[in-house]
Image (cartoon, rainbow, N blue to C red; front, side, top):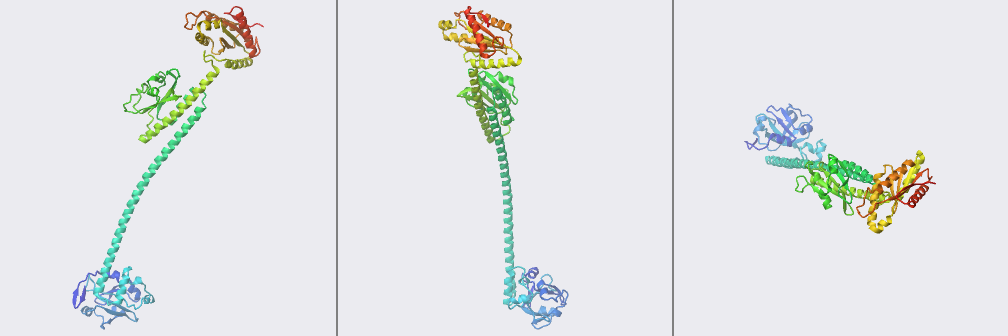
Length: 539
C-alpha cells in the first residue's frame, strides 16, 4: 500500500520481497520507535539499535519537516532524503506502508547516496550490502541514477520475479537432469551387474574347459604309458569318470575277425555283466561307423544296450582304426550339469574329442600288442616261435641254477611230414601243424612252454621236472598223437606219429646250446630207430 496523490494505492510489493532485496530498510511505529532495520543499514549506522527513537538518529532533509507519523502519512513523498545525525551520510528512499499492518508501521527503503562506487569501500560497505543476489546490483545502480519512483520499484520487483522464476526453472531443470542421471546410473549399474554375471559365468565356463583339457591331456599321457589293453581300459574309465562325473558309460572292444565282445569295462551306474553279454551288431554306431546321438524323447530307436536305462541323452561312438571298427564307447546322462543348448553342444564336442583320443590310443596299443605277438608267436600254430624259445630257455636255466632245479627239453618231429605235403597239399600240412599246436597247448602244464622250432619240429620246455617224469610225459604225448585223438578234417590222412628226443639240464648239458644239441641228437636216434618213439639222450 502506498499513499500517492493523497490516495492509498495498492501495489504488488510484498514486504518480505522488498526487505530481502533492499538491505537498507527501516521500519518504525507511530511513536517513532525503530522496530526493525536491514543488516546493511545496521552496518552503515553503528549507533542504530532496535527500539531507538528515530529523531535521535535521523532527520528528514527533504522536505524540511520534523518526524511526525501522522504528518508523514499526509504528505506525498515519492523520494526523500534523511541524514544520519552527526555524520554527512545521506540515505535516499521512499515511504511505504507495511502491507500486513499499515496503521502501525511505516517502512523506509533506501540506499546510501553514492556518487562513485569507490565510496562504498570508504564507508566500509561492499556490493553484498546492497543486494542479496547479483542481479539486484544492476537494479541498485539504476536506483542511484534515477529518482526512486514507484515505477522503478515495480520494475525491480518484476525483474526479481523473473529472476526468481528463471532460477526456479533452472533448479527444476537441474532436478530433472539429476533424476535422469540417477536413472542412468541405476540402469548402468544393473547393466554392469549383468555384465559381471555374464563375465562370472564365462570365467566359470573357461575354468571348467581348462579342467577338462587338463583331464584329457592327462588321460593321453597315461594311455601312452600303458603296456596292455587291459591297463588302458582302467585308465579310460578313471579319466572319463573325472571328465564327466555325472555320466554312466561303458567301453567295449572286439576282435578284428568277429564283432563279439573281447574286452569290456563299465563305470557309473551301469552293470558290467549285461555289457559283456551284449552283441555288438545291435549298435547303430558300429554298423554305420559314425557317432550316434540319442536324445531323450527323440524318434530314433535306441540300441539294445540302452533299453531299460533312465530316460536321458545318450551317445554311442565307434572306435575306428584304418577304417575298421574294433569297439565302441557309450555314454548316458552326460548333460546333467549344463542345461543350455550351448552347454549341451560343448559337452557333446568334448565327448567326441575324448572318443577320438581313446580310439587313437587303443588302436596304437592293439598294434603294439599285435607286433609283440608276431615277434614271439608263430602265426600258423599260435605257439611261441624260436626267438621266444631261446629267451625262455636261457631264463629257465638261470632260474634252475638259482634254485638247484632242473629244466627238461623235448624236441619232437612229425614223421613223414613231407609225404603229407606231397600227397595232400601244403594246406593240409598247415592244418596238421595247427591241430598239433592246439593239442600241445592243451597237454602242457601252466609253467611249461610249447614252441615251434621250425618246419615240422616243435620244442617243449618243462621246468622243474625229473628225468623219469620227463620221459614218461613225452611217451604219453607220443602215444596220444599216434592213437589219433585229434584230427584235421581229412579222412584220407593216415594216423600221425612223431619222434621225440629228450634232454635234461644239468644232467645232460650245462648250457642252452648244449641242451638243444643233446635233445636233437636223441631225436636223430629216435628217427633212426624207426620213428614214433621217445629217445632220451645218453652220453
